[in-house]
Image 1 (cartoon, protein in one colour):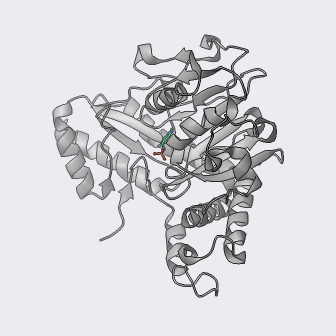
Image 2 (cartoon, rainbow, N blue to C red):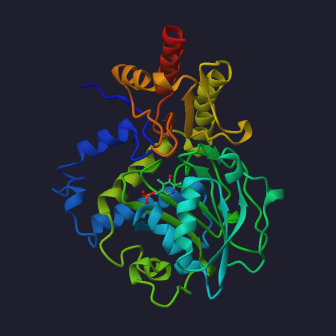
Image 3 (cartoon, rainbow, N blue to C red):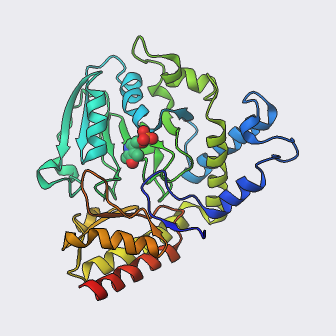
Length: 360
Ligand SMILES: *Cc1c(COP(=O)(O)O)cnc(C)c1O
């Protein structure tokens, strides 16, 4: 069967050239006579793969030298726990901004470790916007301020970097990291599960400022201690080697594609195709405040939800897969990460238009 345009939120589409390269190297990685999956993580070959992946990410995001880059396991949700374990640094409370499902998951986990203050919340508006800086009530004594810079389910993206003063700012960037340039120096810590915009599931990336590590809670397991992992080049235990390799290939692909400034231009254009159409039809509806709409995850509903089933079935017949919205919110969602070509977005909009014409 031909490859489909996969609009799944994660695990999500990967760039086709990356999959092809991985396939070509599957049995013999560059004359080693073995697959990357079969290599020792202590061997020269894998150490070079790991170092290249880290260098690629550092270059793409212009990560300053006083930040560690960690390749960890446990996904984004693992970081919901490891962030408080590592960043409380003897303090009793942390500030969280609640913008939807992923914020709530992070908050629930943090509550196991500290007092959580909700600095701002969009709950009252069904999580349809990103609270403005002026609405944030920050506690200068907080260990850190956590926010979800792109809510994958609600489709709300912060298009600005919050100011947390002297308190370290922490962002869950799982679903929009590498989709746009970001000033890493504004953050204490950035984390992301890989399966949205980086590579295979199971890998989590942490970018953390040097001075924030080394004070993990007593009892923190070694594999979850950023200091221990940093001292061991993220190889305190056997790392997810194949996922790191794939991430490295994605970083190379991004560099060849012109870097993330270029990627941002493409992402703006792709998202505009969908939102411009949503804004000029009564048939579909976008629930998110215009200025906070995500470029990566676009939830929308059909005004007549009795047509949902037909929409999904016909979309799938047209090679447009995984458009069903998250089970908690219903409707539809198109995730259009870096790996989604503009042709896929054009095909989606053409399909939506045709579906409206034939069912409207
Ligand atoms: C997917 C996602 C997560 C969870 O990632 P897992 O790898 O499943 O733990 C966390 N935060 C955000 C914003 C996500 O989109």
